[in-house]
Length: 421
Image (cartoon, rainbow, N blue to C red; front, side):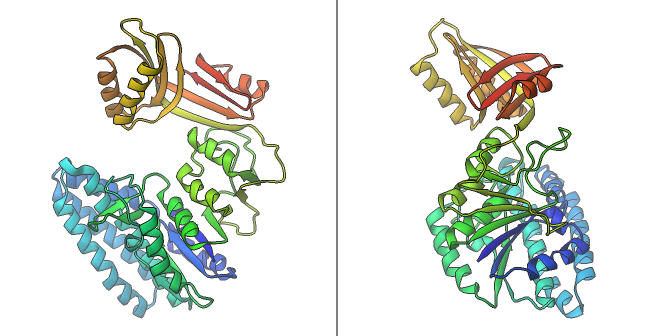
Protein backbone atom coordinates (compact mmCIF):
# COMPACT_ATOMS: atom_id res chain seq x y z
CA UNK A 1 0.00 0.00 0.00
CA UNK A 2 1.17 3.50 -0.88
CA UNK A 3 0.04 6.94 0.27
CA UNK A 4 -0.18 9.73 -2.30
CA UNK A 5 -0.68 13.32 -1.19
CA UNK A 6 -2.07 15.81 -3.70
CA UNK A 7 -1.95 19.49 -2.77
CA UNK A 8 -4.21 22.31 -3.86
CA UNK A 9 -2.11 23.18 -6.93
CA UNK A 10 -2.48 19.66 -8.33
CA UNK A 11 -6.28 19.98 -8.40
CA UNK A 12 -6.49 23.74 -9.01
CA UNK A 13 -8.61 23.19 -12.13
CA UNK A 14 -10.71 20.35 -13.55
CA UNK A 15 -8.00 19.83 -16.16
CA UNK A 16 -5.41 19.36 -13.41
CA UNK A 17 -7.56 16.77 -11.68
CA UNK A 18 -8.11 14.92 -14.95
CA UNK A 19 -4.35 14.84 -15.54
CA UNK A 20 -3.82 13.04 -12.23
CA UNK A 21 -5.55 9.95 -13.59
CA UNK A 22 -2.39 8.84 -15.36
CA UNK A 23 -0.53 8.92 -12.03
CA UNK A 24 -3.25 6.96 -10.26
CA UNK A 25 -3.57 4.46 -13.11
CA UNK A 26 0.13 3.56 -12.85
CA UNK A 27 -0.11 2.56 -9.18
CA UNK A 28 0.51 -1.17 -8.68
CA UNK A 29 -0.84 -1.26 -5.12
CA UNK A 30 -3.88 0.01 -3.23
CA UNK A 31 -3.62 3.75 -2.58
CA UNK A 32 -4.63 6.14 0.13
CA UNK A 33 -5.11 9.52 -1.53
CA UNK A 34 -4.71 12.40 0.91
CA UNK A 35 -6.03 15.55 -0.75
CA UNK A 36 -5.99 19.27 0.03
CA UNK A 37 -8.58 21.92 -0.79
CA UNK A 38 -8.89 23.07 -4.40
CA UNK A 39 -6.54 25.90 -5.40
CA UNK A 40 -7.23 29.07 -3.43
CA UNK A 41 -10.21 27.67 -1.51
CA UNK A 42 -8.48 27.94 1.87
CA UNK A 43 -7.86 31.66 1.26
CA UNK A 44 -11.53 32.11 0.40
CA UNK A 45 -12.58 30.29 3.56
CA UNK A 46 -10.23 32.44 5.64
CA UNK A 47 -11.98 35.52 4.26
CA UNK A 48 -15.28 33.96 5.34
CA UNK A 49 -13.86 33.41 8.84
CA UNK A 50 -12.68 37.02 9.06
CA UNK A 51 -16.10 38.40 8.13
CA UNK A 52 -18.03 35.97 10.31
CA UNK A 53 -15.91 36.68 13.39
CA UNK A 54 -16.26 40.44 12.89
CA UNK A 55 -20.03 40.05 12.90
CA UNK A 56 -20.37 40.59 9.15
CA UNK A 57 -22.52 37.51 8.79
CA UNK A 58 -24.23 38.48 5.54
CA UNK A 59 -20.91 39.20 3.86
CA UNK A 60 -19.70 35.78 5.00
CA UNK A 61 -22.82 34.07 3.63
CA UNK A 62 -22.38 35.91 0.33
CA UNK A 63 -18.82 34.59 0.08
CA UNK A 64 -20.15 31.07 0.68
CA UNK A 65 -22.51 31.49 -2.26
CA UNK A 66 -19.55 32.40 -4.44
CA UNK A 67 -17.56 29.41 -3.15
CA UNK A 68 -20.51 27.11 -3.79
CA UNK A 69 -20.88 28.40 -7.36
CA UNK A 70 -17.16 27.80 -8.04
CA UNK A 71 -17.29 24.22 -6.76
CA UNK A 72 -20.50 23.56 -8.66
CA UNK A 73 -18.91 24.76 -11.91
CA UNK A 74 -15.81 22.66 -11.17
CA UNK A 75 -17.87 19.52 -10.57
CA UNK A 76 -20.09 20.13 -13.61
CA UNK A 77 -17.07 20.26 -15.89
CA UNK A 78 -15.85 16.86 -14.64
CA UNK A 79 -18.97 14.81 -14.03
CA UNK A 80 -21.84 13.46 -16.05
CA UNK A 81 -25.41 14.13 -14.93
CA UNK A 82 -25.70 11.06 -12.68
CA UNK A 83 -22.50 11.67 -10.73
CA UNK A 84 -23.04 15.43 -10.66
CA UNK A 85 -26.50 15.07 -9.10
CA UNK A 86 -25.17 12.63 -6.51
CA UNK A 87 -22.19 14.76 -5.51
CA UNK A 88 -24.31 17.94 -5.37
CA UNK A 89 -26.44 16.35 -2.64
CA UNK A 90 -23.29 15.42 -0.71
CA UNK A 91 -21.79 18.89 -1.08
CA UNK A 92 -25.01 20.49 0.15
CA UNK A 93 -24.49 18.77 3.51
CA UNK A 94 -21.17 20.57 3.86
CA UNK A 95 -22.61 23.91 2.75
CA UNK A 96 -25.22 23.57 5.49
CA UNK A 97 -22.51 22.76 8.03
CA UNK A 98 -20.60 25.81 6.81
CA UNK A 99 -23.62 28.08 7.22
CA UNK A 100 -24.08 26.85 10.81
CA UNK A 101 -20.41 27.51 11.56
CA UNK A 102 -20.75 31.08 10.27
CA UNK A 103 -23.81 31.75 12.40
CA UNK A 104 -21.94 30.41 15.44
CA UNK A 105 -18.69 32.27 14.77
CA UNK A 106 -17.44 35.07 16.99
CA UNK A 107 -14.25 36.98 17.62
CA UNK A 108 -14.08 35.62 21.18
CA UNK A 109 -13.50 32.10 19.85
CA UNK A 110 -11.66 32.90 16.64
CA UNK A 111 -9.45 29.80 16.47
CA UNK A 112 -12.41 27.49 17.08
CA UNK A 113 -14.49 29.27 14.44
CA UNK A 114 -11.57 29.18 12.02
CA UNK A 115 -11.33 25.40 12.18
CA UNK A 116 -15.07 24.78 11.81
CA UNK A 117 -15.09 26.86 8.62
CA UNK A 118 -11.70 26.24 6.99
CA UNK A 119 -11.93 22.44 7.25
CA UNK A 120 -14.71 22.53 4.65
CA UNK A 121 -12.24 23.04 1.80
CA UNK A 122 -10.81 19.53 1.99
CA UNK A 123 -14.23 17.96 2.46
CA UNK A 124 -15.57 19.63 -0.70
CA UNK A 125 -12.56 18.79 -2.87
CA UNK A 126 -12.40 15.13 -1.87
CA UNK A 127 -16.11 14.58 -2.49
CA UNK A 128 -15.72 15.86 -6.04
CA UNK A 129 -12.49 13.90 -6.54
CA UNK A 130 -14.08 10.70 -5.24
CA UNK A 131 -17.02 11.08 -7.61
CA UNK A 132 -14.69 11.64 -10.56
CA UNK A 133 -12.59 8.60 -9.66
CA UNK A 134 -15.71 6.45 -9.48
CA UNK A 135 -16.98 7.82 -12.79
CA UNK A 136 -13.62 6.85 -14.33
CA UNK A 137 -14.09 3.28 -13.14
CA UNK A 138 -11.83 3.35 -10.06
CA UNK A 139 -13.14 1.78 -6.87
CA UNK A 140 -12.40 4.46 -4.28
CA UNK A 141 -14.02 4.78 -0.87
CA UNK A 142 -14.43 8.30 0.52
CA UNK A 143 -13.49 8.56 4.22
CA UNK A 144 -14.08 11.56 6.46
CA UNK A 145 -10.71 12.14 8.18
CA UNK A 146 -12.57 13.56 11.17
CA UNK A 147 -13.77 10.03 11.90
CA UNK A 148 -10.17 8.82 12.06
CA UNK A 149 -7.85 11.56 13.31
CA UNK A 150 -8.65 12.33 16.97
CA UNK A 151 -6.99 15.39 18.51
CA UNK A 152 -7.06 17.68 21.50
CA UNK A 153 -8.79 21.07 21.28
CA UNK A 154 -5.76 23.18 20.36
CA UNK A 155 -7.55 24.73 17.42
CA UNK A 156 -5.49 25.60 14.31
CA UNK A 157 -2.59 23.44 15.53
CA UNK A 158 -4.19 20.38 17.07
CA UNK A 159 -2.16 17.63 18.74
CA UNK A 160 -3.06 14.13 17.60
CA UNK A 161 -4.11 11.32 19.94
CA UNK A 162 -1.91 8.76 18.23
CA UNK A 163 -3.20 5.53 19.74
CA UNK A 164 -6.87 6.36 19.27
CA UNK A 165 -6.28 7.56 15.71
CA UNK A 166 -4.22 4.48 14.85
CA UNK A 167 -6.96 2.19 16.11
CA UNK A 168 -9.53 4.11 14.07
CA UNK A 169 -7.35 3.99 10.95
CA UNK A 170 -7.05 0.24 11.28
CA UNK A 171 -10.75 -0.11 12.00
CA UNK A 172 -12.11 2.19 9.26
CA UNK A 173 -9.48 2.44 6.51
CA UNK A 174 -7.56 -0.84 6.58
CA UNK A 175 -10.56 -3.06 5.57
CA UNK A 176 -11.17 -0.83 2.53
CA UNK A 177 -7.66 -1.36 1.14
CA UNK A 178 -7.79 -4.40 -1.11
CA UNK A 179 -6.28 -5.29 -4.49
CA UNK A 180 -9.53 -3.98 -6.00
CA UNK A 181 -10.24 -0.90 -3.88
CA UNK A 182 -8.53 2.19 -2.47
CA UNK A 183 -9.33 5.16 -0.23
CA UNK A 184 -9.53 8.93 -0.64
CA UNK A 185 -9.55 11.20 2.41
CA UNK A 186 -8.67 14.71 3.51
CA UNK A 187 -5.40 16.12 4.70
CA UNK A 188 -5.08 18.87 7.32
CA UNK A 189 -8.21 18.09 9.38
CA UNK A 190 -9.34 15.99 12.32
CA UNK A 191 -11.80 16.19 15.20
CA UNK A 192 -11.85 16.46 18.97
CA UNK A 193 -13.50 14.02 21.36
CA UNK A 194 -16.59 16.27 21.17
CA UNK A 195 -16.60 16.06 17.34
CA UNK A 196 -15.53 19.65 16.81
CA UNK A 197 -13.48 20.02 13.64
CA UNK A 198 -9.81 20.94 13.95
CA UNK A 199 -6.96 21.74 11.62
CA UNK A 200 -3.44 20.39 12.10
CA UNK A 201 -1.38 23.50 11.40
CA UNK A 202 1.20 24.25 8.74
CA UNK A 203 1.73 21.46 6.19
CA UNK A 204 -1.10 19.56 7.87
CA UNK A 205 -1.93 17.56 4.75
CA UNK A 206 1.61 16.22 4.54
CA UNK A 207 1.33 15.29 8.22
CA UNK A 208 -1.93 13.42 7.61
CA UNK A 209 -0.27 11.43 4.83
CA UNK A 210 2.68 10.55 7.07
CA UNK A 211 0.45 9.54 9.98
CA UNK A 212 -1.74 7.26 7.91
CA UNK A 213 1.32 5.68 6.33
CA UNK A 214 2.81 4.93 9.75
CA UNK A 215 -0.48 3.76 11.26
CA UNK A 216 -1.23 1.40 8.37
CA UNK A 217 2.27 0.22 7.43
CA UNK A 218 2.59 1.84 3.99
CA UNK A 219 5.59 1.05 1.82
CA UNK A 220 6.05 4.71 0.95
CA UNK A 221 4.56 8.20 0.81
CA UNK A 222 4.67 10.39 -2.30
CA UNK A 223 3.97 14.11 -2.13
CA UNK A 224 3.04 15.34 -5.61
CA UNK A 225 4.08 18.96 -6.16
CA UNK A 226 4.53 21.36 -9.07
CA UNK A 227 8.34 21.22 -8.77
CA UNK A 228 10.76 18.52 -9.91
CA UNK A 229 11.87 17.71 -6.35
CA UNK A 230 13.49 19.29 -3.32
CA UNK A 231 15.91 22.12 -4.08
CA UNK A 232 18.87 23.21 -1.98
CA UNK A 233 17.21 26.63 -1.57
CA UNK A 234 13.95 28.39 -2.36
CA UNK A 235 14.15 29.17 -6.10
CA UNK A 236 11.94 32.22 -5.51
CA UNK A 237 14.67 33.71 -3.31
CA UNK A 238 17.88 32.36 -4.81
CA UNK A 239 18.97 31.85 -8.43
CA UNK A 240 20.68 28.70 -9.70
CA UNK A 241 19.26 26.28 -7.15
CA UNK A 242 20.18 22.60 -7.34
CA UNK A 243 17.81 19.65 -7.16
CA UNK A 244 18.62 17.09 -4.49
CA UNK A 245 17.95 13.52 -5.63
CA UNK A 246 18.37 11.83 -2.25
CA UNK A 247 18.56 13.23 1.26
CA UNK A 248 18.24 11.88 4.80
CA UNK A 249 15.39 12.53 7.21
CA UNK A 250 17.96 14.20 9.47
CA UNK A 251 18.94 16.79 6.87
CA UNK A 252 15.34 17.57 5.95
CA UNK A 253 14.24 17.99 9.54
CA UNK A 254 17.18 20.35 10.14
CA UNK A 255 16.19 22.41 7.08
CA UNK A 256 12.57 22.53 8.20
CA UNK A 257 13.51 23.52 11.75
CA UNK A 258 15.50 26.46 10.39
CA UNK A 259 12.49 27.62 8.41
CA UNK A 260 12.66 25.97 4.99
CA UNK A 261 9.24 25.53 3.43
CA UNK A 262 10.01 21.96 2.47
CA UNK A 263 8.61 19.22 4.69
CA UNK A 264 7.41 20.02 8.20
CA UNK A 265 9.32 18.25 11.03
CA UNK A 266 6.12 16.68 12.34
CA UNK A 267 5.68 15.03 8.93
CA UNK A 268 9.14 13.50 9.04
CA UNK A 269 8.93 11.99 12.54
CA UNK A 270 6.36 9.19 11.93
CA UNK A 271 8.06 8.27 8.65
CA UNK A 272 11.54 8.14 10.16
CA UNK A 273 10.31 6.22 13.18
CA UNK A 274 8.82 3.58 10.88
CA UNK A 275 11.52 3.71 8.18
CA UNK A 276 9.05 4.70 5.45
CA UNK A 277 10.61 6.53 2.49
CA UNK A 278 9.12 9.84 1.40
CA UNK A 279 9.17 10.80 -2.27
CA UNK A 280 8.69 14.32 -3.62
CA UNK A 281 7.63 14.16 -7.27
CA UNK A 282 6.22 16.45 -9.94
CA UNK A 283 2.58 15.94 -10.91
CA UNK A 284 3.24 17.95 -14.09
CA UNK A 285 5.73 15.32 -15.30
CA UNK A 286 5.47 12.01 -13.48
CA UNK A 287 8.46 10.63 -15.38
CA UNK A 288 10.86 12.93 -13.54
CA UNK A 289 12.84 11.14 -10.86
CA UNK A 290 12.06 13.55 -8.03
CA UNK A 291 13.63 13.34 -4.57
CA UNK A 292 13.66 10.50 -2.06
CA UNK A 293 13.96 11.16 1.67
CA UNK A 294 14.97 8.18 3.81
CA UNK A 295 17.13 7.09 6.73
CA UNK A 296 20.29 6.58 4.72
CA UNK A 297 21.50 7.71 1.30
CA UNK A 298 24.40 6.38 -0.74
CA UNK A 299 26.12 9.74 -1.06
CA UNK A 300 26.90 11.95 1.92
CA UNK A 301 27.75 14.95 -0.26
CA UNK A 302 25.25 17.78 -0.22
CA UNK A 303 25.35 21.20 -1.83
CA UNK A 304 24.98 24.11 0.61
CA UNK A 305 21.41 23.95 1.96
CA UNK A 306 20.22 27.53 2.25
CA UNK A 307 17.28 28.87 4.27
CA UNK A 308 16.38 32.55 4.54
CA UNK A 309 13.75 33.68 7.04
CA UNK A 310 12.69 37.29 6.66
CA UNK A 311 10.64 39.51 8.97
CA UNK A 312 12.46 38.49 12.14
CA UNK A 313 12.96 40.30 15.44
CA UNK A 314 16.22 40.14 17.39
CA UNK A 315 15.74 40.64 21.13
CA UNK A 316 18.57 41.27 23.57
CA UNK A 317 17.47 40.61 27.14
CA UNK A 318 19.70 41.85 30.00
CA UNK A 319 19.17 41.23 33.71
CA UNK A 320 18.42 44.53 35.45
CA UNK A 321 20.34 43.59 38.59
CA UNK A 322 23.39 42.30 36.66
CA UNK A 323 22.66 38.71 37.67
CA UNK A 324 24.35 36.09 35.54
CA UNK A 325 22.19 34.40 32.90
CA UNK A 326 22.66 30.91 34.31
CA UNK A 327 20.34 28.06 35.27
CA UNK A 328 17.73 30.01 37.24
CA UNK A 329 17.52 32.89 34.80
CA UNK A 330 17.48 30.58 31.78
CA UNK A 331 14.69 28.55 33.36
CA UNK A 332 12.73 31.76 33.89
CA UNK A 333 13.29 32.93 30.31
CA UNK A 334 12.35 29.58 28.81
CA UNK A 335 9.21 29.46 30.95
CA UNK A 336 8.10 32.82 29.57
CA UNK A 337 8.71 31.65 26.00
CA UNK A 338 6.87 28.39 26.69
CA UNK A 339 3.88 30.08 28.31
CA UNK A 340 3.51 32.40 25.31
CA UNK A 341 4.03 29.51 22.85
CA UNK A 342 6.85 31.34 21.05
CA UNK A 343 9.36 29.39 18.96
CA UNK A 344 12.90 30.74 19.07
CA UNK A 345 14.84 30.51 15.81
CA UNK A 346 18.26 31.34 17.29
CA UNK A 347 19.54 31.68 20.86
CA UNK A 348 22.77 32.95 22.34
CA UNK A 349 23.60 33.95 25.89
CA UNK A 350 26.50 35.78 27.53
CA UNK A 351 27.25 36.69 31.14
CA UNK A 352 24.26 38.93 31.82
CA UNK A 353 22.43 38.91 28.49
CA UNK A 354 20.30 36.57 26.44
CA UNK A 355 19.71 37.00 22.71
CA UNK A 356 16.78 35.46 20.86
CA UNK A 357 15.62 35.71 17.26
CA UNK A 358 11.89 35.13 16.73
CA UNK A 359 9.27 35.54 14.02
CA UNK A 360 7.83 39.05 13.90
CA UNK A 361 4.25 38.28 14.84
CA UNK A 362 3.04 41.55 16.29
CA UNK A 363 0.85 40.24 19.11
CA UNK A 364 3.40 37.62 20.18
CA UNK A 365 6.30 40.07 20.20
CA UNK A 366 4.33 42.66 22.18
CA UNK A 367 3.28 40.11 24.82
CA UNK A 368 6.81 38.74 25.07
CA UNK A 369 8.41 42.16 25.55
CA UNK A 370 5.82 43.05 28.19
CA UNK A 371 6.50 39.82 30.09
CA UNK A 372 10.29 40.16 29.85
CA UNK A 373 10.35 43.85 30.78
CA UNK A 374 9.23 43.12 34.35
CA UNK A 375 12.66 41.78 35.29
CA UNK A 376 14.88 42.49 32.29
CA UNK A 377 15.96 45.32 30.04
CA UNK A 378 14.89 44.49 26.50
CA UNK A 379 16.43 45.88 23.32
CA UNK A 380 15.07 44.96 19.89
CA UNK A 381 16.00 45.03 16.22
CA UNK A 382 13.07 44.69 13.84
CA UNK A 383 12.98 43.74 10.17
CA UNK A 384 16.06 41.54 10.30
CA UNK A 385 16.63 38.30 8.37
CA UNK A 386 17.96 34.97 9.57
CA UNK A 387 20.17 33.18 7.07
CA UNK A 388 21.00 29.53 7.73
CA UNK A 389 23.44 27.54 5.58
CA UNK A 390 24.06 23.87 6.22
CA UNK A 391 27.21 22.43 4.62
CA UNK A 392 28.41 25.97 4.10
CA UNK A 393 31.63 27.07 2.48
CA UNK A 394 33.43 30.37 3.17
CA UNK A 395 32.72 31.40 -0.41
CA UNK A 396 28.96 30.89 -0.21
CA UNK A 397 28.78 32.61 3.19
CA UNK A 398 30.67 35.62 1.85
CA UNK A 399 28.54 35.78 -1.28
CA UNK A 400 25.26 35.76 0.63
CA UNK A 401 26.27 38.31 3.28
CA UNK A 402 28.64 40.67 1.44
CA UNK A 403 26.09 43.46 0.99
CA UNK A 404 24.36 43.06 4.35
CA UNK A 405 25.00 44.35 7.88
CA UNK A 406 25.63 41.35 10.13
CA UNK A 407 24.25 41.64 13.68
CA UNK A 408 25.13 38.17 14.91
CA UNK A 409 26.82 35.06 13.56
CA UNK A 410 26.93 31.50 14.93
CA UNK A 411 28.91 28.62 13.48
CA UNK A 412 29.09 24.91 14.10
CA UNK A 413 30.96 22.31 12.10
CA UNK A 414 28.16 21.93 9.54
CA UNK A 415 25.93 24.98 9.99
CA UNK A 416 26.27 28.74 10.04
CA UNK A 417 23.51 31.15 11.04
CA UNK A 418 23.64 34.88 10.44
CA UNK A 419 21.25 37.58 11.56
CA UNK A 420 21.51 40.51 9.20
CA UNK A 421 19.82 43.64 7.92
